[in-house]
Image (cartoon, rainbow, N blue to C red; front, side, top):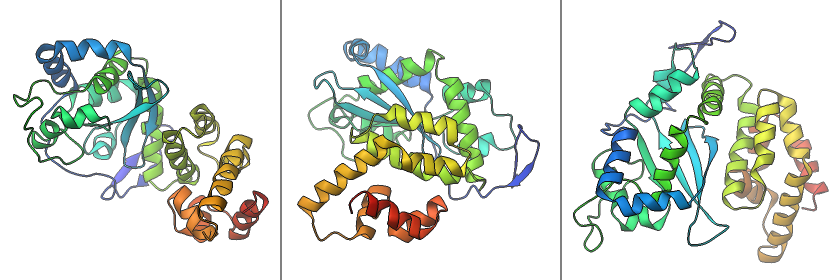
Length: 291
């Protein structure tokens, strides 16, 4: 299977089996929005009181968002929007804003939000049993929303509003193009692992996520970007704080275990392999941070 990179006209072999999870699905963005607004109008009105940010695309080709909590200022809930078989749909196509808009708004999608309402008001159950949910839920509601009205929580509806504003498609197009290059095995995977760590850190509210976005844009295609990422003072500060916390809560934790927890890789060697840097550099880096 080949990928035609429209920017340099090179033909690249791609294995999409790992990145495409093929499931049936029966919902489009506009259909879910219309069902929500018509059947649960009071809920729909509350979407005006929350704010949504686009985070980026995951290594599985799933678009990620975060939306402010209306009841707990300063906290966020996290949403995902998946176009099933995205890689196959981008294969051999010119990846531009028109294509991404078509896939997101006109193709069947899968959605998820980690807020309590998505679960307890049966939206997660409806999404999964009607095959537009990305997370399983087979427990039918016994108390709340037993008539199965609506489709989206206010956070996902806010995501829809942000998408349909049209302001995201340039960034989503860039992310989608970079993701295709990533799964094609080009050098983009050097910094992508650092980006994934950034997503996890952002969810814990430990680092200002704009830092990661700036490095994503400026250094995503460059191995030097990995070093820029590791050398950033905000990131060093966050890791130092985690090292200090670990020293108090788990003083016997090994460096391998610490790296596995923070980066999601198999210890020192795993981080060196993922970032394609020398293992001694990794050890020296964390030693200088106080581990």
